[in-house]
Length: 178
Image (cartoon, rainbow, N blue to C red; front, side, top):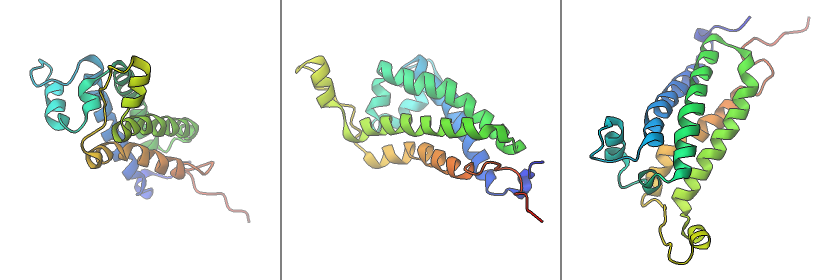
């Protein structure tokens, strides 16, 4: 029988984090999937997104196809739903979530790491190589601190999730011999 959530007080952190991440994925990332953030958009979420990150995240503002697919489709539809499942599993102490959560955490670390790498390091040399010397656009963020502050919680919580679920039975008391 699983330990009740009231006795797993540190798991509240994960429940709150997953619920927050589900909201950001399902609301913000869905807006990025269907349209570009724009101050004149009919979509209030697109206007909010533009107002919040307009100058800090040129990659999100440009919204190229790979961002629509990775941030939009993958984060909004796959991760957003998965965060809700994680919240449920943590509240109810469901052990079946262990392996999917570990794989999901790896996906979050990889996806966010790639996105942050483009924001922090830029990608002008890659675009120049792929698109020719006339392509000089770079998605490098003018504010590395802002980029890290907004994006780092996702892989950080993912790593903490793996540590939390490392035991084979993370939601039950260990069986004692004797």
